[in-house]
Image (cartoon, rainbow, N blue to C red; front, side):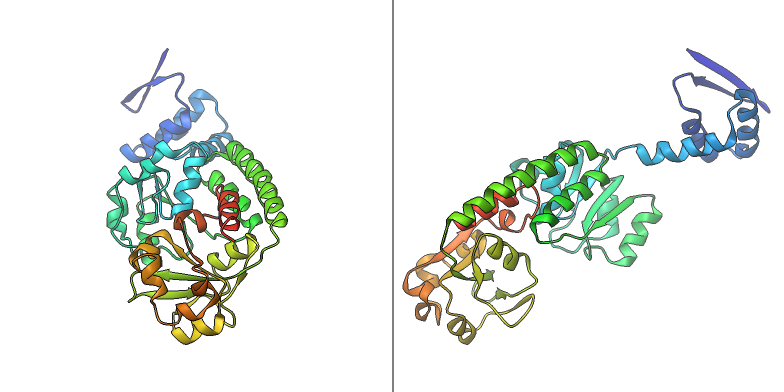
Length: 318
């Protein structure tokens, strides 16, 4: 059904199903007679002004995003797990799971992103880890009308379910978010039962490697320190936080029972035989027993719905 109105010579045909507040948004932008139109339209339809403004705001907030950009692997995986993967139009370089994500455009070939690159995908929502976007870029995006939501990820079991709920709230999928968070919590409890049954608590040294020229060791306050502890291990790197450059002396002093690397780091160093030849490795318990372990990097640092899987898989390496 169509309803017609004529105000000050401005004729418009309004479908009954169209909410007047949505019409208001169009008129406000398209014509200089906005104020006159609003006043007369409200009088004609007998809609209270307060109700009109309230429903205008509610409609804008409630509308879920249709074009999402995710700027971390964990965010990408979580949006997908919440059933909104089809809404993702572009991702960052760290997003590689699920497999179809590799077919999506990348906003950049590095971790650095620009407002121009992000805007080129016409998103209505950008999800980013805290610190990914600088203030200037974030300001440009918001000035262009893009909803930008930054999320702080906590590397813990509770942090994982909190993260899921935050992402679900951002994309308007709260019901699915509660379901996924509850399922993840159940799976975490099962994972911790597996950890308790394994009496081994090895000293684990995580090395981030991009060839022998780039080797860093993970200390406290890192995702790797957290996953090692959740899986029942002990971080062999003590006395410092974040990451620090790898040194032969530090390796020998740490004397890990097991050396852990991401799969791509393991390959960049040439595999088991080459790693065992790195100075100092052969002097550690890990080197003597050939306990050099590689695992999928995205899985280990996910700290979202796949955290239980990461805990069980890492614990199985002990």
